[in-house]
Image 1 (cartoon, rainbow, N blue to C red):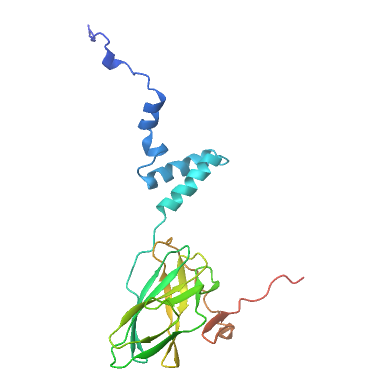
Image 2 (image 1 turned 135 degrees about the vertical axis):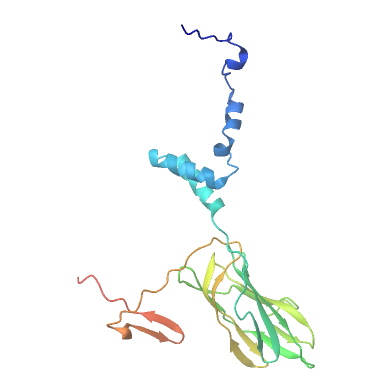
Length: 229
């Protein structure tokens, strides 16, 4: 004969009802996510079951923005260079909403050297669109020109009006001592912007290598024609 003994029920054995505040607190990792990536995965799973749920869609959008990888500062190839006796260094770009690209300039020579910022400065963003600077200035005098004194240094800023996370191409132009110089930088991630990938051009058709060519430094790739009508 087997006998089962049990202790009398106590308060510890009873599941107590929770009020709304306690329920919200216990669900904190989802309702007020401390781990955004975990919450995003949970919401995306829930949206699969209820694809028309606007609340879930809004939360997912905000969480995707919060969890998107950010562009970090990395070394820029050939960032330091010399033009007409002036030493320049490209510091990179920041402020993705209104991108700003910054250079330093220094005159190591014994005599002043004239520096002018070329009227038009261009870049190509991650969508392939050409963007032109909205503002450019030399910090030393808030102008677009400066007779750089010997052993003096300052910053140069180029500001763009359109949101961007990356510049596929950036070609700053400087006039030093009356001579125009152009530099080229590629794949410049804008600090604080979303980490994005830039589409590369299709491989060249080996049967028609003439379809890919370059004009004035711009690569062109003819893909063919469609829509006979």
